[in-house]
Length: 194
Image (cartoon, rainbow, N blue to C red; front, top):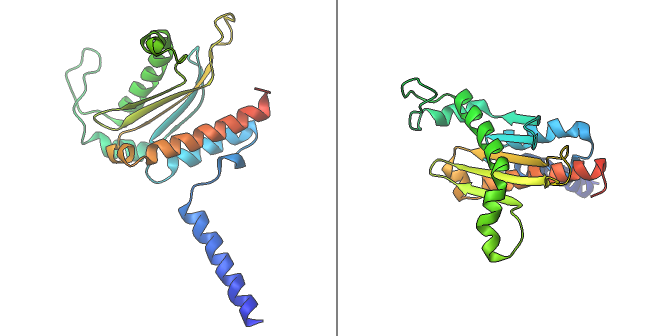
């Protein structure tokens, strides 16, 4: 009996340890109503990405999550920015989020130019783009490519960003973005047949 109690305590301890130290499996997010929870979970994981956006190609934001505490902690260490006609000033977390929103839209709008750039390799169109910047990094991935024959279906993309260069270098930001992407693909599969 004491051996059974020992093993049950050991098993319970191992389960608790796994829950605390390993990220949640993306397949646990299945239904459309789980989308918000997936965004909150993977953006709020320690390290990794600071911002994530799921948007339609027409600019409509379907889901967005911001780890403002982390972003603001990094912003004080970044160069000043010039916004509009104002003189250069320290960036705020809200500034950085707005920059990322604009960048996500611009990447989508200029995808034809990026496709033309890689067309020389004859390997098809861009599906995923990663920018390893001087200050952190940026991720962009289509969940549904735009349909050029359909004016309504402008595509669906996932955008993620971090200001932490260490998280880019050690791959944790990419891991968290990939987990969020897999969760979104899982939710998308429950909505439609791909």
